[in-house]
Length: 314
Image 1 (cartoon, rainbow, N blue to C red):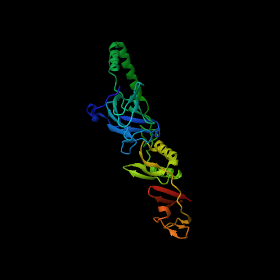
Image 2: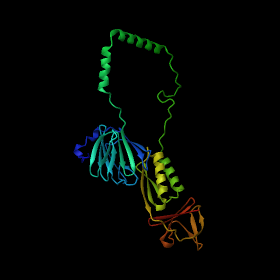
Image 3: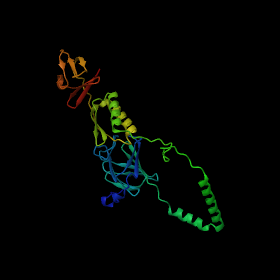
Image 4: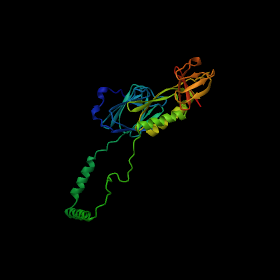
């Protein structure tokens, strides 16, 4: 049974410990991504304004709000229904406009995406185990305690006589044999993304840096949707744990091939093309059918008309 969650009924957000909850994406476009959640409140949806952006189908712009406190999560369905599996394996359905507070861990299904929320805090020691240990000590008889004390004394003396292990100078005793995993840089992620877009023929999509993260903006032909989704999924698998990619792209209708003819292209200093009349045409010049010569870069001649973009690859 679900109930509408009141803000006043939500536990104090200050009780949420930074990084105490981890989000794992189990299924969907961003499968394999894991993120440490350090804030008490998160909004998940498909809009760029959401705290966590999902590009999967059937995910609303602001689909769900999560409030964390004391090993629990309050789930509020803002823009669509949310399917939940609680820590006991019970399946629940939270309807739009309703909510539920549950103990971690839980699994959520938003559209075609399935997430898992789990606490990373160590469980407190059980009072019953402490009482049990106290009872065992009290039931031991003095001869057994004396024998135990003698055994500990002998072991300690042996440890003092044992030769010390030699550690090479400059080596750390805490991470010997454990390779350090270096997080990828923003420059590396951007370079990989731009190369992937170029190799897929999606040169009309441009990469931007926003507050230490990356975004991609532009329109692409509807026929290239699968190529874009494959690039987005590959990026999340490689860099998603450290760098967030915000998509601001849209599938557009097929772009008609511009009715222009070039006889030659000069890629040197001050690049230009030779049109069908033998004239030099430089970037910025207008072409037939309101096309404009946008740029000449690498092995491509790019044209633009409003939101439409077209590239000739030589």
